[in-house]
Image 1: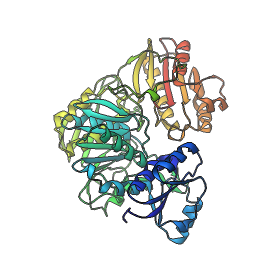
Image 2: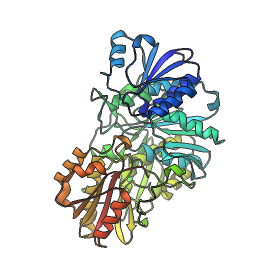
Image 3: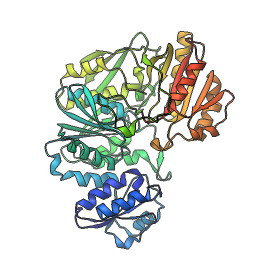
Image 4: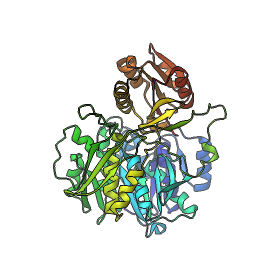
Length: 516
């Protein structure tokens, strides 16, 4: 299906629909945008209608007016326009498919290789590690929930901050990169819930834990299979060998298929359906837990590390926000052995300063991708050895003399909070600490759909008494009740309150859903 001189409607302007509508209009189509959730500022819609000749509506439009619809995979199929399209057999393109079709013939991307990374966990850390590895030889632009960055020789610089990882935001990421005069050798895109079909290399990190989308009428794992089903002929797919559904879908693909063994699935005793191409093995270091106690923490955990450029003025904190306390790295460590088709090709001794078990999926996926793209094994090993963890991804730090386990990021969910608490409790026992001060909640409910207060209430009821004190962050958390709980408006305020309560014999555990 070509995207020229068609009459179409783009549904859901909240989650990346606006850049898709703008681009489709610029390509010569008659475009209407439907604000399904009614959350977009009417003034912004009016401005876009005037400047881009796009008609916007907050109510469903008659289906008969359009050749086809463009809708996100997570939209409730009962939405009137979708339900009518299904009954009449009218074509509905996903946001992913539409962006893929827009980009496939874009002359500005000629000669630039594209990497798409999707999955439930470890997307951001895989993408960031891969950008570091590739940047030792190539110029790389990386788009993740951390921000839009250009990487050169292992160093990131910020281009833009504030974009989501929806397919539509990728159009904006490319536009801002090219406007800045940056034509990289590689674009690396972290993508939510699927793939666009533009990738020269597509990476699937995990399909577990699965969850419902589209008002619980579908599974996220099925939507993520777009990475495979939309893969272009001659491209390469790097898939988690524990994701059986993905491997089954890949049997019909005309792409080259490679697999890696995720240590997390191994610990869960998941039987792999085939021998993987890439395997990561770990050997214990000074801070590695005994095998019987080691925690399998699969971690996507998207957070903002600090690239070398300053953030935009709009991203600055509010003047009234308290300053974040001074933080310095703590300790950890172990040794990795990396095998390709049964042959050990390198080993790497990891630096201290973070809980490396949270990165095992990213270590193997990024290393396998880099090697497949021609990066020398010595470079891959050196990047792993230099890695210090990403901000908010189970880093162990010193917070004004108190041990901090930092697990605050935009991808943090209640399962991640539980795993982080398990790790902190083992650390408390092993190091004979007095107690745990937990900072838990959200800074903004719109960050990746927020942290549901009902989930936090269940967490507090089940695990709250394992902590000396819980500081709940965010307006919605005021509805959560706990015998040993208090409240803070923001993460910095929560950390300052934790410091007031904690002594050097305590552990502060930070698990707040936020952009940083």
